[in-house]
Length: 289
Ligand code: PDD
Image 1 (cartoon, rainbow, N blue to C red):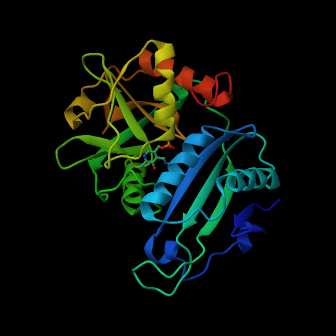
Image 2 (image 1 turned 90 degrees about the horizontal axis):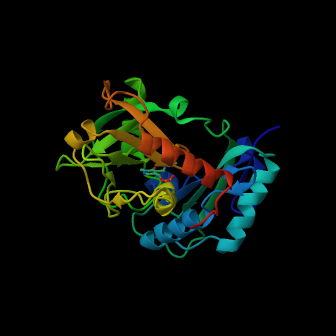
């Protein structure tokens, strides 16, 4: 069965789904996106994703292409037409639309809306088999990383460098030597003093929906979070490191630049949070806290 995509009001086989050559997403990267995890038809943290989409659109002054409730319906229709019954991902891309190429905003144009979905492997069974490695490198992105824009070139290059080094992600370091986030995930540590830390929200990082959902679960786990930036040295000296995203969930990091994190095994806090998020993702806990 061929995959089905939604493009501007039509459901089409992926091979026939197209946007225009003068689409500003293609010409300028003038657009935003979201990636939502779906567990047996249930959209995880859907409100968080649609709230963030609303914010990204607002920051770039792009109109909603359809009402928010209508987008919810389109997402479900794409999942259903692709017969995705297990673990899956939905991608939403919205651009400022197609218009004669000029940098300035065009006269009122309909935004472009694309929704696609695809199957994912089943939810990871245990944190040990889900653990992975990262490398570190400079953060080469722009000054508004809080907007989930489709301009992902530095992220693409970072992820490729990681892949070529046999790692899954790159933790990016700002010009002050502090860690921002990874190429497509947020990063957390349990520091040498035992404090759970992740960088505070600001223009330097994406406000991850997984980050937000996990932070809301910490009280139940009797854990407190310190939202403070940490340096590359603190990252290297951490007791535990993990990343979060819609596709990584809570993913333990057991090596950085080829050196083990602590003794190289998944630590107790990461283990606890892997389980707490698994319950959240699979629906044993309320979707939004
Ligand atoms: N990436 N930081 C960056 C730069 C990201 O691209 C992502 C998500 C995150 C985590 O956000 P969330 O928890 O809402 O997924 C943090 C998605 C998965 C992607 O681009 O594929």
